[in-house]
Length: 454
Image (cartoon, rainbow, N blue to C red):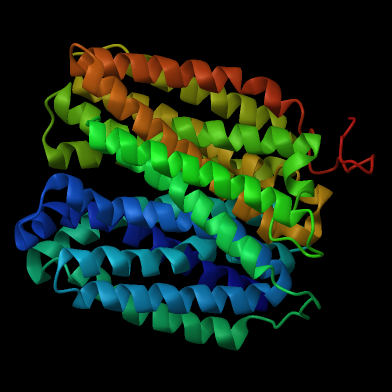
């Protein structure tokens, strides 16, 4: 019974994080008018959050394995709460962006720690539990825009941050009471490696965000400088990690053949699934002349499709294995993207297409989240953190490239057609990577170097 209570607490946390992410977009116009700022500057309210969670995900995963999942989870929740409080009190855009960064440091660490706790609480059915846990996030994507709109309209933009605070306090208290304390590993934290990893990822994501915001000479120069900094720090990090006893980067999760395949697939998943979620509302407005409200409603079938398909896949993952849900989901998503590449006059058909994409993502998500976990079951948090990092980088890269394509294309419709067809082709090209991962949860590593032969 205790395990189910803990699962419910973690589920509430995931919904809260999802609502917080999606409700900010609704408050965007009000924040712009309140502070009298440009759209590009306001965009950093969202960009800084994405930068922060990308940098902290692999770090939080490793800290979960060292400090314990409960301790890491509580620390992340505390950071998220403090960040929300600072956001609500921010008197200007500079402090709001800084506060969102603090909030992201907590938000990015919640998922890896929570995944590790779920795996520990359900050792005999962890694949089903992790899959079901993944299906909770889209619930917040449905609630967030609607709740955010209601709060902003009646109580102002600060209310979307104020509402987090009592909910976070409740979660922290419940987690402290019900979650089990783990025996910590005796290991030193690689602080230098942590700093190098975070700053290198932050520089990479910042470069992608800046180049996606415009193509002026100054922005291109700033992006080039940040890319160079990221490359230099990454090279320094790799050299440093080979010398320390307990590196922040677990090379087994990066270089083993099944893990390389899983990380490659999740990077492409981020390009096509996370990236496309950011593009579809703009596509609906600019190509199909929908209103802002209609473009938000258009995303609802995607979330519903993800919830249904992901829940179904989670229940049958032991029977179906990893490969066929991932293949079916990848092909369904690619089909939906290709259909978006054609301009249909009927807006009703757009809801059908977005539902197909949601079903495809829902089929893929539980399997791709679980793939390879049984090869290193003691490092679930680390695997989840690195997996999330690759997805976020893929999403940021796709948005940056898509922005350049839309800026260069003769018309918005042609630009979106190139983007959707390109994403569909990339997804289909990722299918061979699926066959390099274990076929099902029953397959275990048979070689020391984790080259699984099944």
